[in-house]
Amino acid sequence: MNDNKWWKSAVIYQIYPRSFADSNHDGIGDLQGIISKLDYLENLGIDAVWLSPVCKSPQDDNGYDISDYQDIDPMFGTLEDMDELIKEAGKRNIRIIMDLVLNHSSDEHYWFKEAKKSRENPYHDYYVWRDGAEGTPPNDMRAAFGGSAWEWVPEIKQYYFHQFAVKQPDLNWENPKLRKEIYTMINWWIEKGVGGFRLDVIDQIAKEPDKRITNNGPRLHEFLRELSKETFQKADLVTVGEAWGATTELAKLYSNPDNSELSMVFQFEHICLDQLEGKEKWDLAPLPFLRLKEVFGRWQEELFEKGWNSLFWNNHDLPRIVSRWGNDGKYRVESAKMLAILLHGMQGTPYIYQGEELGMTNAAYEIEEYRDIETLNLYKERLENGYAKEEVMRSIHAKSRDNARTPMQWNDEKNAGFTEGTPWIKLNPNYKEINAAKQVNDRNSIFSCYKELIRFRKQYPVFVRGNFQMLLANHESIFAYIREDDQTQLLVICNFYDQTVDCPYKMPGEDMRLLISNYKDTDQNFILRPYEARMYLGEK
Image 1: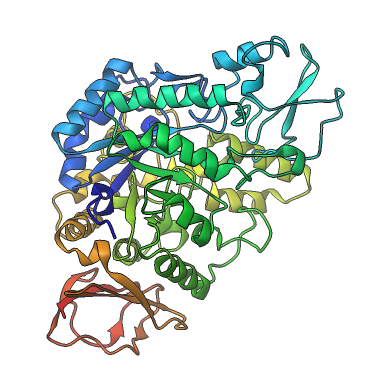
Image 2 (image 1 turned 30 degrees about the horizontal axis):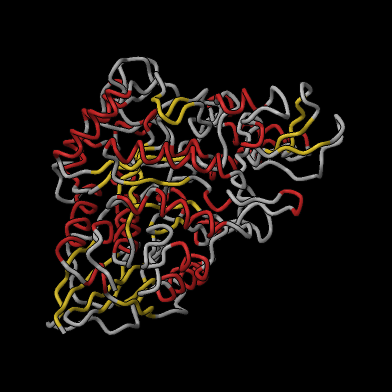
């Protein structure tokens, strides 16, 4: 197996630019703000930064509606700022990963403005159109953000297809001219020195709406192989595709070690477990812990030497993990460290979402304080469908994407040090207790725990190449596993809950040393305290 790819021992940090650091006091984070925090990221030890979209956009979906792929949105800065960020990050051995949205564009993109002028326009076929009569869409497909997936354009008496917001028309990958334009644009960014790309909902580019196929369409892997050949294979890049519909079998195609498609995918099987079967994410259910272990174990074992895993708890679309599956009250520090130790011991490339390394939590706002289009649409739809307001707000407090989008908590001063202006979204009021300034020099902080885990991944090859064996698969409270290579054994034992438990697994002897734990006074006993996590290392 080819272990010398830099991204296999890397840890990647995701930044949501509008919420990270504001340099010009307008209340919105920007590229110069990120540049000002590169020393913080270097101190943490990460290898690459994945930037949520910074390209020019009307911001109908927070930048995932791109109107110009080769320019920076003025709210974030300029192309010169982007060049400076790539250069300054490079000085600190940090690569910049762009977020590319290739399934759809903004309806304000030049291509779409041309496309809706006439059916004969050369750009018309860059999008997915169907004939029909006004008020009678081609079929009853729904958009992910609510409403019909079809929008009528009176000028040409056709419907265009949009899987997300109305202002996000889907691109037509069946058109080779469109694909060529996309490759030219990607190669332009590669020339600029970016270190890779995260590909938004990439499993949906081969959609066939007449057959109601949105993800994993018949031509998907053909398109991805062509995309990789024409762009990614020309440089030493990391590429990760967002693929909500991925299975382990599909992930072996996406992340085949022959490099024919992508480095890895984000799959979401584990992240969808705490919702009612067959329902939406808003339909809350307790986490089925044994299923969580089964899912992680299966992905670890089935992709071993046949693909590559991405490891994550959080991103810009997900609630804060310490509030979701940890304990954001009494055991916030212990549970945040436990979740970190559990994840970072596995095989794959770990992703840290901004503030995760501080144990930032969900924010329970009033509805008028939310900014996310998905959240606001959900609130309106569910009230109209007869749900009680309290029930809808409980779902929003648990799962709104804005939980991840509250400003980064740098210190306990005005606006948490994020901005001198008025923040674009309300701060989480707990920033006076939870912030970077309190943690960076504290050896027992969550930040220091993440820093250690990042260092271990560089130091011990077993983190990169070791196989995976689940222990105590049917235990209702303990998540434990072993990683092994030819020389080394790594043992991870975590109590996932807030009750003290006896550990039936025999604790290691003197041949294994405690590498890290989340309690100061860890001994070799068999009792695990609330959320206790231990990681041991030994030579074979």
